[in-house]
Length: 169
Image (cartoon, rainbow, N blue to C red; front, side, top):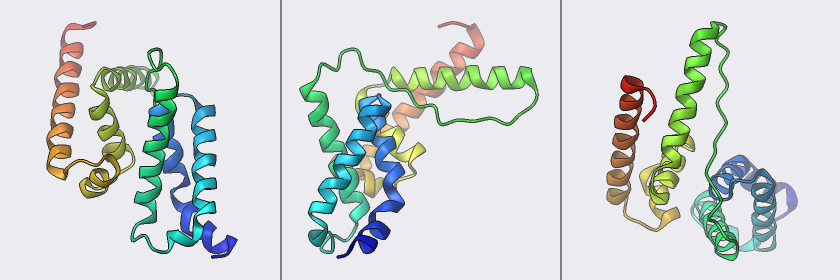
């Protein structure tokens, strides 16, 4: 496999690897380093990539495992998940402020979820992976993913409604 074949095979999901790494590691620098390390590992094993049915799922699983190894090596007690991909072009200032507040609250509610639910929300709702793909990445059954995702969404919905009705907590 030459460089252009490798590039065309792995570059379409480069951003997904970065976002998953950032979701696990929080730091943009750490996520960039992780992405680079994953691509280096893929490059070193480029001949084996032909044997995989879904190179993207394989790379995402590698990313998850790599991030977990990094987190085990570090003290993860001060880390939190932040995801700031949202941009609004609404010119109405009041609506814009309210929307940003709501997005901020949703991010905080996601951060308050158990780790497994946070990662499933990231992979399903942000990265748009199927339940089967998430199952392969996280090594759990698709039915367990559906249940966990449903519970996470229900928790977020209930807490968001409570915040909107009563203000702060």
